[in-house]
Length: 128
Image (cartoon, rainbow, N blue to C red; front, side, top):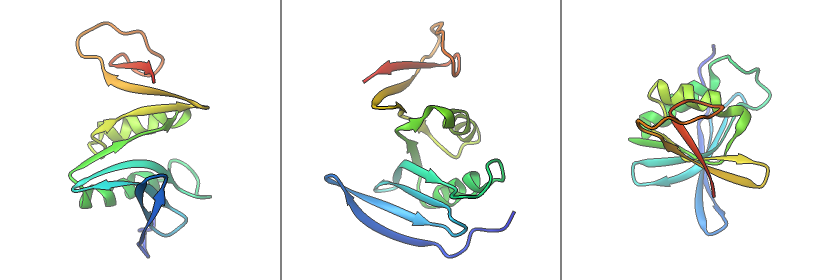
């Protein structure tokens, strides 16, 4: 895997919030919201690169070097296994919500309760 080069950072208004975007080269881009030493990922795109080549993980390693806490919101359902794996690897601290069309679901750690879920026995989905 080639390293990500040409890191380009810029900010723009997203509604009433100031978003931060990182273009990491090779078509890889991260968009989210920075607050002190925390970053809320809204978009992680590997562009036209093939999946499962490590570019998503490498981009999160870049973020981890800059921020103490990384959360992810508005996760598309098909990408949830990737985000769960990144959380397991310690590159993401918390998954906040899943986006299913125009409906959002908040993810909460279920603790010791028995939960039936398609994603993981430790997660509870609540419609927002």
